[in-house]
Image 1 (cartoon, rainbow, N blue to C red):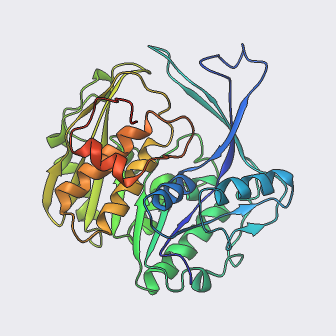
Image 2: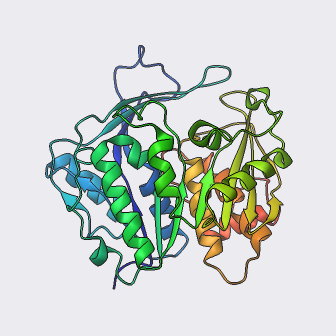
Length: 345
């Protein structure tokens, strides 16, 4: 049986200087794997949902190591293609205090960047699946990746799946010829649910929250009501829109919350204060996964679904690496108000 949920995108080798060293200081790198859509898949498996991840990996030792990394978390990998010349890499320099983190991509010509339409048997991959998830990172990578993403989303639409997208705008990636808006407009029009951060709608569709300054360290939830309404007006198929709200007091100290618009009803979540961030990479992905999980439960209303997603992603800030390795019970404890961090014996 095919997995209930399928995610699609590129997973890469992540290389980081140990601790808080800068690139110019380090003589070694810590190596793990991660990427937006694979991060969502791992979270959903941790929450107990049968989930598969689709990508293309090189047929070499690094590709095999990446595959084994995914399998250890229980992600379904049978539809991952093997081929191409190399695994994409990204380098992460972790920030601290007033020094922000930095990302350097080395993914040109990767196995995933060179995919082309027709390589993936989408009707077979999505057979018996109920939910398909992708992010705006995928069509930004290359013209071929954008075409395959449209192929996948169109098939999912034809099959009647629920389709979710995290807009995930990456300015450093949109270099292959078309703008983000040109490409994303057609793709998002086919979706049921969209997740974004405070800036994504502005960067892609020129939809800005009025009177906001995200650099001020405080983000006001109600300012994003018109953003949700304008997105819903542009894309009538969207019935659910979620926007994460990060207040950056420093690289090490953020606040974290989100809002949810669902068929005209607006909900906002409590704000978490996160003063000692371990790793913020993948926080948006963990929010998307938390929301997908919660919306697949029949016992949670929109407000409780939003609170679950925000709590899950707040916990992600305490975990090193791209993956949010938390359980449903841990998330529900935080939703219930257990914020002490006491030892569990």
